[in-house]
Image (cartoon, rainbow, N blue to C red; front, side, top):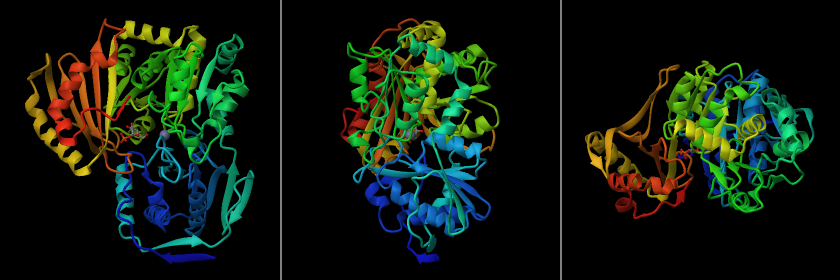
Length: 539
Ligand code: G1P
Ligand code: ZN
């Protein structure tokens, strides 16, 4: 039943910040998935005896791609697949399933927070035995393989029924269809004080969790409503839909509009949160109050001792370079390790595996810990609920007290989308060449202390990665420039701005960053070069 089918390469199968991400219309071309998967299998080499985890966020084409992957895995000699029921597994749950079963890796079918549907995006994230996504050294090899692929192997059988739990066999390969929620819930119960959070809800505390019609709906219903006793209706948009019901499941102030409007209305719940398509991102809101992801990472780290799993101490904390430096002050205060890495969760994996860090996070609404090797949306929400239950304070009180203690890092990200790739590349190259000469110069009253490319030297595998450009000012303010690595067409220029204040704690971030924004535009010449005088998305 095993067939070898001839194919010709696609030249665009290079993985980005988090796996392969393309327009659905690109991925649905003949043999597109087959070429990519066969290239991965070829690079892995020996597949006999190996186990992989497969699932996705339920977006358009998941069902088709998953059948292809199963049949190809069997044809290539993989011994066992662990698959989420009906093909569903969130990214964090997938990482846990890999680790718990000591699997050799896994494939999560998702384009994360990008819109889904035939006109949206599709993607595949490939993790190895660490439970985290593969390093660039391996994805580079896979890309080389995609450029010369000539054939792929597939088992010619009828589609496999993934609706029933249990074991079955396909072309000599064992398949275990599992409940994707169960293990995840057990893991969360082992980390947080569920009794305290339950008592909080029993006292009348209210929350709204927006699953944005994506994969976390079933996880959130089970944990927040069923187990912890949040009032029925606390979890909204909980049914995963192939096109996310038209929503853009990116949990931020722009795309999680429904939740934001509710939380800033007079009917607001005590606590609000949203996750993204595959459940690894989170947004945290209080009553008429927004917590930036950079602050959230810093606040969680500062309160580690309130959480049962971390109360005996944490190793350290890491953030992506683009994330605000708020957490650096917390790391200093607690005298724990502190690391800055390139953008992308895979850069945290070595630090976690080598016990250098316990917590990590990114400004892009990602927070997590070494319980798994991916960021974890529901984990972050439970962490906040646990802090609220333990302190009896509101989200706003917790955040304000944090600023009083450490000062506030005002932070905003500006995205310039749909820029011509050549224009964006040239802008970055020219800026990189110019930055060193800016040191010592003063713009709008801000003096540049140093400027140049951000280069990360991994302390574990000694690889070196260049990611983005940073301009630092003497008062602690910073500008970071990067090109996105997750887009499915054109280039997105990201400009991250930060300004620190010890005592001006209740100001408007955009106002605080007016001058820094002006400087960021003038030195990069973004308006002149792209024709864009305003960012497309401000978060
Ligand atoms: C974006 C975020 C980054 C995150 C990644 C995957 O990547 O900025 O922090 O790790 O999505 O969720 P980018 O498009 O900036 O390369
Ligand atoms: Zn995601």
